[in-house]
Image (cartoon, rainbow over all chains, first blue to last red; front, side):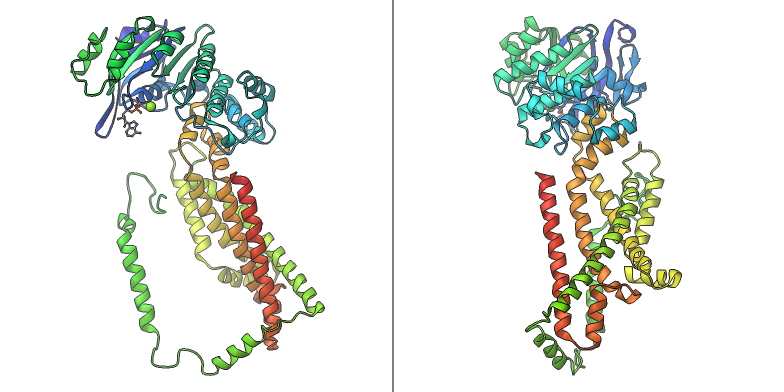
Length: 270
Length: 271
Ligand SMILES: Nc1ncnc2c1ncn2[C@@H]1O[C@H](COP(=O)(O)OP(=O)(O)O)[C@@H](O)[C@H]1O
Ligand SMILES: [Mg+2]
């Protein structure tokens, strides 16, 4: 496994990462490698550890154990801020924008890793790189909301503002936590098109948690199933059947789940 | 809020002070003691007090409303408000930077000593009443407007700094996490997250303090500044109670205007 971590062909190489919160094991020790160009879907019922895994990959939450190597460099040793922001970006489940700021400021916050302090401060009054933010917002259909107060926007619009921030930040690894869970089907597809679009250029990747088998098959190349913090399967999304996913979400399972391709992960837990 | 004495998160000396029952016990004890020291057998109010009070009340019908006197009241109100504005401006200039430092959010965590020391300074500034500061400043620079302004600004700066620090700390965390994930340093998280989110509360508390500063500026007449307090003192000396009433009504009106202004402003910041 450690040889895998050192392999530069892997954009993300995680070895033995785990996380517990007091009594709860949010994530059992897990190995995961992701190549550039892969589009990875995370599936699993609520509380299965999807958010925890994304936060660990994003450097927002420290794992209890294990190591993550991103683009050949250990995440642990990367300075938060500039370095990390160029590599990894995260869209949160609840958007987590600053409600009091105008939309454009929430978008330009994606530049804070690159801007100096003075520039950041001045931009609060006279927005810098305005065209860039406006262009991205126009692409997302928010051209008329540039100066609107963010709290006035609907959930779907805020979702797109969060994505606009990420597009401005333009990281190589895009992590999205349930980006479509609160959106209607049409908007869901729109958002997934945008997210996969960010990850489309060479050397990039997308990891997103979502629940719909159709969307997973259509927009992703690989799917990882989690349940109670334990890896259940990891396979090409083309092989994902509705049955497999239904079993992952089934109540009161334990043991009887037929897990394709889980051998090593299951062995690690026991 | 982290207590003042908690210099390091792990080590908490004087932890017993966090016990809520202890505080209740102390407060109840203080109340009982204060009731016990009152001499209940003697008359509680001065014997002539009743007559004086009725004189005073009767003067309200009507208060002094001559144009000359109203003009004087307007000028006095203006003076009081200008002193209050000057004092609150200096208080914000002191309280805001110190409050930001005391909140401990401006720099990467690590050295918690500087915020703790600033917190102590703020506590020192506000633990002394503005009248006591006034006495100190008068003995230093003499009877002057400057003495009065500084006497208000110092304790108010201490109060504002303390409240600002709390408000800056108590904003929701998820948006801050998201900013950090976009590469924002603590200072930038402060600028783009903490301050915008805390702004309505910061403004409305400052306005509340401005109301208090008007009150305080009025009683600073005894260090020689003009204004409503000064006029009240003069009218009282001449036992012109109807004038006193007019002046007090102006005082109330001032505070009400500020209150209305601040709730308007706050509403526009929140929505
Ligand atoms: N900050 C936290 N404190 C305590 N428990 C947490 C925290 N974050 C997550 N957990 C717990 O870890 C488990 C996994 O949570 P999470 O990663 O959010 O799952 P998911 O995103 O799949 O719903 C859950 O049982 C959750 O209650
Ligand atoms: Mg989640």
